Image (tube, rainbow, N blue to C red; front, side):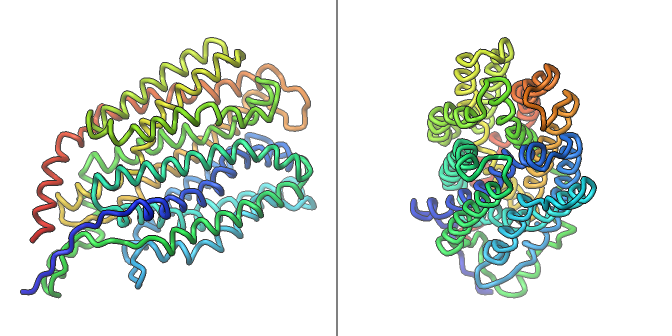
Length: 459
């Protein structure tokens, strides 16, 4: 029986940067959608906030289900580029087209027509084109960086690139909209969306042409391949017995739900702080501590354990939001502890993208199948559901506060709703993260997992 061992490759710094450019591309699109689409719908299209929230939530649940389907499709994909990478180039143009569509709601449509239009276009973007493209990118991460330690380092690059991109989008979008004609102008939204779409395309292409999928397992003859191949049903049944499978998804839900309430930033900056352009400052003050946290994270994970550092980060975020809640109108207090919260959030968030890889390692160790597509799809399902609920909460809580997109001055109930979204919701989610992390004890068994996998791969 012939057998040829293929050891997991270690990516170069250049490869890590080229891979992380994909995060720049996807976060340009989703950063703009997540932070400004609700604002576009309520203040330009003039739809009720509650309607917008409901549409977004329903769409993102469909999105979560499509993630699982896409994960199965990726598992079955075979091409000269691999199983995940080809989807980047196959789906980038459809992704850009649907992105432009969501930011162009025809003015001639009546209220019902506009609701139908945003529902259809948002579902196409979030549940179809973005899912197919971005889930393939996330899956590529576990294939591009198969070694656990290398994956942790690569995660820092992509986390930094994604974080800076999202913050920059938050900082420059309002000034650019003003420069292009103002938030009330459809031309301004269309122009800005076109600019972002072009940059995103270039970034994703850098990743497509700049990285390759690496092999994990041993190449064997046909009979051994048949023996070791697991059916998708077998893989699902085995993974369904793993608490790590579900915890990775739930931790993603909590993290992305917290991030997705960033759609309230522009409302909070304008109504609580008195200047919509301060939405950029909200992101800017947290940038240095988040960069520091992301750089320190791999070292801290290695020294103290990933779970323990994520737990510490959640505790820091919890304490910071408690202090902010004491006086939400105090700018100095808000910005100071927003920066500290950013440091804590990044200690937690820098590890989120590595959890599917950890579960894939567990799956390979326990059942002999890594199932990257399926594992990543569930984690992505958690991210999409979290983002969907977060987007829904922005609309619903604003509606409960009687927010009026056409009003120059909002009622106190609307201001209270904005404070809840900006501070209260993240506080609750920090508590949920802490509880979930108490059940994540992967660090205790990882040394055994990695040792056995190294021995198997060397055969």
